[in-house]
Length: 328
Image (cartoon, rainbow, N blue to C red; front, top):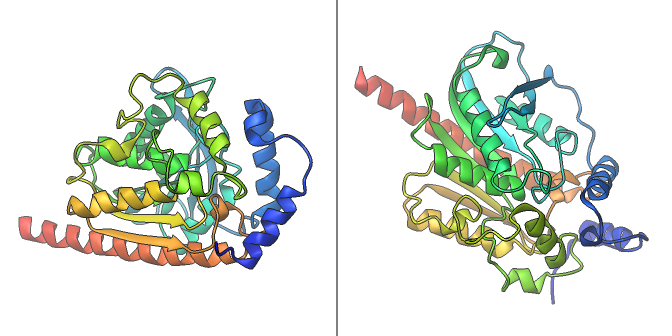
């Protein structure tokens, strides 16, 4: 029998009682509004934080990329890491607002600057637009721009669902190629395999918020008829080599159609010799990390992840200090 946490079941019961079309039956604009309303209702308020500033930078094709910077410190503080956050939403929905509370919580818990990236969405901007924007934003932050407010010592890439996909792609593309190192990647129930259709994708195809039909809808808008869905820029699980990747925290949920993809990516990182922490929340659903008011147990899941990520970042910082000392 499938275990479902009581607060998760209560949320699902409430959701299933709501009238109206399902995600895969909506147009993208309507789906974006629905996600915004759901997060507003089900997520915790942002709370206090010293800096929460909206910025924008030049994108790769003349577009502007909106960003939001979060920090517990005033501008002009000591050098520190920056975490680049890529929001979830199937590359079609989601924005700075849907992940506002989460990003503030990350900044408060880790004590580092967080930059949330409002990348271009499909179908208006299909594959590989989202990834291009995430790469551009990460390159920008790694160069210690004045807008950050401090020198950048290292980068962490992170994201949930589609954002986990984009974080993995960014790590694969930019590891060892920036002025500062990418020291960690945090992949939150990531979608890393566009070809997946068995295992958890079938076991939890319906009834657990994210459905197989919704995933097909997202992928149709994002990659369309991509000739090779195993292209690592779309399906990072299919990358031929991961041995140069930064240390990873991979987090999955037990009732998630994407669960097995996250498990497989963590296993591939480990097999490639990448220091990897794997966490799975039993009885939890996809999307829960931004539904913490409606699903209180998700706050504990988040706190556990942040504790693990802080250890990874601290260990990487100690390694960098030793390497610098040895070089001198």
